[in-house]
Length: 306
Image 1: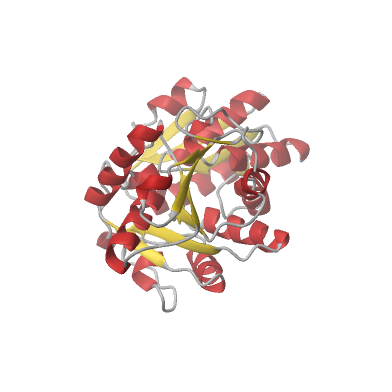
Image 2 (image 1 turned 120 degrees about the vertical axis):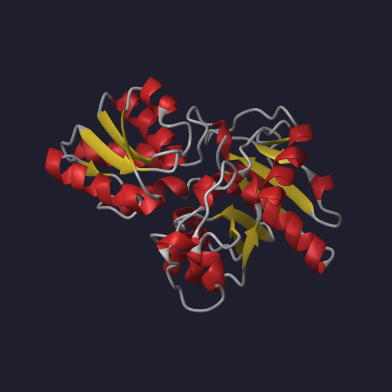
């Protein structure tokens, strides 16, 4: 086990960009490790995916990337485009995140649209086609690059742990991270369980589980200051994410805003400072431990944004 990558609060950044923090006393009987993916410059676990998309777009001769976002992917893409000297246009639902202030400060052009994240996706595709830019959305033409970027967390864990953990706890919005983790785990021969955590009632992955994936009515979801990145009436890759979770023997858990806030507060002693939504995976683990009794083995929790 690498002492360079596995430490307590104040952990150094590892070779992949983020620390793995030992929080063993969070859940009785289990060893809990916090993979703090908020430590990227953008504060978002989506930064490796954004970098991979930008690299692919540049190799194909593009100089402009357009994406829709709830906040995390937009911040990551703004940073990746700035580093590559590329133009970045971000479409954000009105009233979400910080209104695009952070992304503008990072050099991105921000378009605010009424409606939901799904409305922003539609508008971003229109803008990309109109301007001859790359559609950099998670299910766009560079989806394979998105999966490649999100998947880097798995070799980071292999470097730190040497052996697969019992379970990985992953926040679910569109389902992209879940799919990427599953693919990379299978490539390594790991059989760890993947558990997905969504905003209760506000994402079709959790409302459909364990049955067939079904979109929610657009007016059936409620976004708050705490759950925004987890809210989708149509998770763009939700069906495949559910299949990935089922393949590992995992489950999907829905958590409420109060549980998100509680999980964020529980991380403070360990030097992690995600948003409430960024602590979703831990909220799911804590809810599971309370509802079903003691856990065992090593459980890795992915934090997603700050």
